[in-house]
Length: 127
Image (cartoon, rainbow, N blue to C red; front, side, top):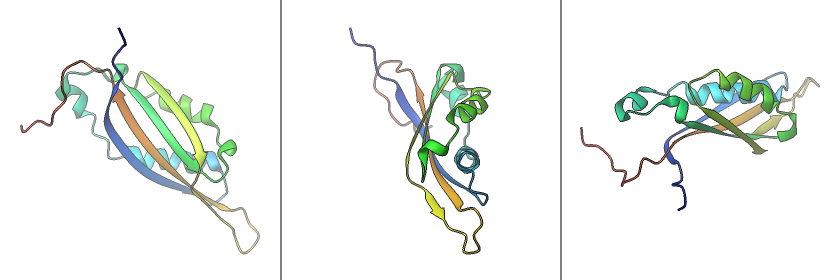
């Protein structure tokens, strides 16, 4: 028997900028921006344990290899989620400083929360 795929129950989008050219700082700000509207009440209402949830973080930055994903994962690991997966792809913006300083780096973030499929059909509550 094939195990049910987890269900995505929340997606949040955000962006962050670092004027010093630090890709990890821009990514951290994008994650914070995306997560600041999160309402964890959903877990209580649905009878779910956040520790069983998976947080998938998608980041877009001009230089994906410049992001310290281990540092970001360690910071997110202190949160309520059971696991954190981070993927980084080409995206965001790098804006040159006309005075020769470091580029301004802008990151985009998508935070997706997945929970185990408890079976049955999912539907919107009218409560």
